[in-house]
Length: 69
Image 1 (cartoon, one colour):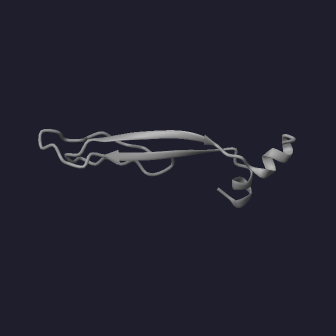
Image 2 (cartoon, one colour):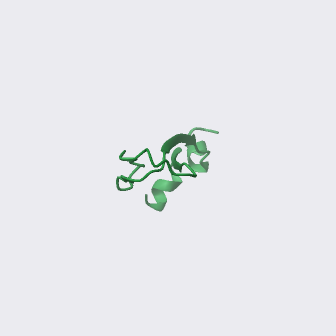
């Protein structure tokens, strides 16, 4: 995003790709993970993974002024 777009942002999406600490030789992770605009990722290994996503509202001074806050 441009600096002007960032100044007008009202929310941010946060992505976390968590991976198990240990491998499981009986499991092969062939899932494809897509996090926001990043290229898709297919690990093809023996780790379990899970994606967590949250959207956070931002208190933006320009937005607060526009809304009268």
